[in-house]
Length: 165
Image 1 (spheres, one colour):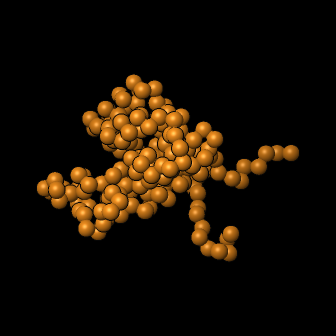
Image 2 (cartoon, rainbow, N blue to C red; image 1 turned 180 degrees about the horizontal axis):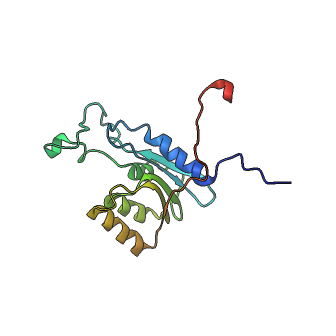
Image 3 (cartoon, rainbow, N blue to C red; image 1 turned 180 degrees about the vertical axis):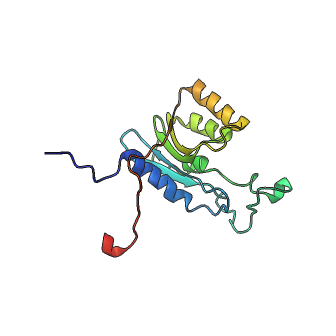
């Protein structure tokens, strides 16, 4: 009997969750999501880029340019850091982190310290920056695997109509 392939792979599933998490971000320019998974393919945590808990997303700036305190940069928690901090399921040792944007150097430090051993990413649009070079150098030194996500299917559609369920 031929093997069925009318389902998505684990990579597609977890990256889909990272993409859905990114949609929670109120950042008007860059929405990033992360999903951390253990070696048994169980979700440990998710996160997206946003303000810290207790800091109203509508009260803090989302601008990219201007006086530092009037931009998002000193305030926003990145998706990977939020996923690490949101974890309540146990140790992140030997976990994989699915993230929609290649991690910055600050998130790389948190990923390494948390015990995550593999990072799967979609976009590496800042590959030319010093921060990205620093991330790659730290990941290599720490022995963390990096893998660009390549979907096995051409398109994944998510339907929210009750009739489709």
